[in-house]
Length: 326
Image (cartoon, rainbow, N blue to C red; front, side, top):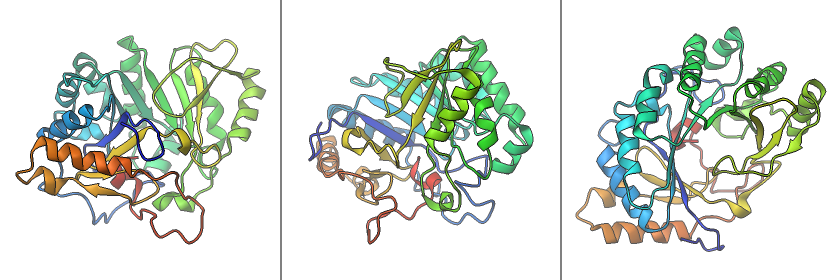
């Protein structure tokens, strides 16, 4: 369906949990989290499937499963299988921190997962521990290697370049795409929650570093995903390098996505708190038609653009990234 600005909305990011087995400094406090979604409030898989069936009738075709960390929720691969069976759903992908990926990769691929994105901000164990506050670097790398060993091709590495942590790591991260056909994407740090304390590394600076080490970056004209990433090829690389710049390369004009939090809030923009709580409708005697119509009306009201760094905005979402699903 189209929103009020004529954008075709066909992609939903679904957070299936706000819990995580890492504590990344720009995402979650180290301890004392007071606002986890309770087990009674989190959407059941049956509720998620019902919502997706209704969303599919509105034209949603693509799903990204997120968290928190989605793989900490039991039965994630079974959910993938059931989502793939819904009429109208063309693609189901997942973003994971990779800690549990080695043991669950085969189940996900068997269930029909279409893409696996692994969040990885460094290839140095000590820096990984500093960023995530956990010593799970070896587990994450084992998970990536497991996916490669299964010859799964739609693998992406997501990196958030932060001046205080990994600026000197970015060339080594990009090199992950040299000998295997995966994509390394550099995602601009967004000023949400704890991330406001850190400094982003600009796209231009990253491109200069990569060009110096690997040669000229050539724009890639093909399609490698559903989102706004712009991809480049490098000499001798089997994979590609991507950039997602929500702030300095603003792509709101053709944003095609909505978000569903783990508690059932249909979120229309990552930056803003506009949307609606679907849980009361789900848990009433409302029909699928009534639920679908409620979502239709909400999606139509999707805001034109985010307001990061703009003053006097009263609609900014104050929640942390792990609470809204990224």
